[in-house]
Image 1 (spheres, rainbow, N blue to C red):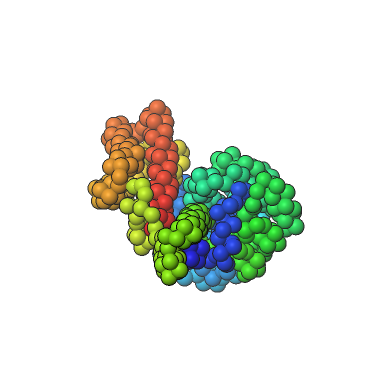
Image 2: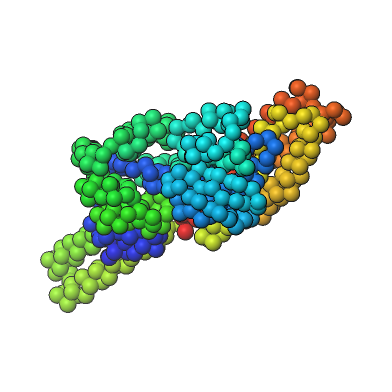
Amino acid sequence: MAIVSGVSRCAAKGVLVKGGGALEMLARVKTVILDKTGTITDGRARLIEVKSRTDLDPLEVLRLAASLDQGSHHVIARALVAAARERGLRLAAPSGSREEAGSGVTGRIDGHEIAVGGWDFVSARIEETAFSREIREWIRRDGTVSVLAAKDGILAGAFLLADEVRPEAGSVLRRLREAGVDRIVLATGDRTELAESLQSFLGLDSVVAELKPEDKTRIVEAERSAGPVMMVGDGVNDAPALAAADVGVAMGARGAAASSEAADVVILVDRLDRLVSAISIAHRSRSIALQSVYMGMGLSVAGMFAAAFGYLTPVQGALLQEAIDVVAILNALRALGNPKRGWRKTTQLPHAELIQLEAEHRALMDVVDELRHTTERIQNLPKTEVRKELADLDALLRRRLLPHERQDDEELYPRLRSRAATPDALAGMSRAHMEIQRQVHSLTSLRKALGAHGPSPAQRYEIQRLLHGLEAITRLHFAQEQEIYRLLEDEQ
């Protein structure tokens, strides 16, 4: 009864556990082997950086490229279109589009001839300039995919896209260790240097890279000596390893059908943290099941001794045994419930609210990007134009970023603190809000202090230093908030 209740609770979390045996094995896992693409990482390319000519707005370059890419089914083209829509850009309808499969697209947008694609595709259609030579070096980064955009035969800008680490990955690995996992291994077919870069900040015990599908099965067998092994993956090439592991877990939301078929557990939502939820439920269900077993057997043995010494008649003994069975079953049914322990249990966020909060952060990413773009532009702008750039940025921050931070501090955080066992649990987040507001105020002061002829070299350096710091703290703050929100939603 307890095991079946645990399976039911996992299903409510979006985790399909194929039987009681798989749930019990989840509670005994000592080693976890994780695939990289689609498991530790999101599995989809996302725009991480834009670089444009100084005379062009980076968002305008993105709009032109995404407008042309609307008709393409290439995964990178779809990623650019998604990035433009996340930033609220209005895409224009292209005309005369021509696509070379796997290379790029050309066409007309708003009367301009646009070309979007890789370096070889775009460089054959543009004049060589100092900016194109700069971009040629800028796009050489491991772990990224570059896309270039040309406008009327001249390079307009470039985009870097990457398969980013899931925002909840760090929290998931930490909570896996808290749940009793002794060893976490990353197994991937990617290059060694890319895999080792993940180990440097995720705290993995081991990384094995450049693997073929059959190699993952051998790793599962080798790790089994330390205890039961869990394999987590999502692709067709992970299916043999999932089947070989003591418990195979498939990321089924966007994964291959073969991996879901071979796995003992399928995560039906695109959330890696559901794995920790399933393990926690498995631990609790197994513990309650053992309690019921020991309690039922203990009471039955006590009843037998009482009957042996003549204190119970056969009818009383039969009735007592039925009562013992009912008590054991009722105790087992506790596995259906959610224990209320700690402040996280009392500060849950409804799923709809979590989605809304994450959408608000995505909508503000163009503001954070503008901090970087302004920093780059004022490096080469004439002194007289720097003042206008800073005034526009200052107005943007005060119109969109600061109201969002104030709303969080005045509405969301008090609501969470009022239900928390520790009222100051979000003090660090409020302190970050204060620092963001302070740095925006400092930007305003620096802007107003500029002379009539623009900034001196020292002032220009100070402004750039401030903008770099403001961008860094805002990105970090958004990432921290997102992890907190997901943690609270996960505990429902």
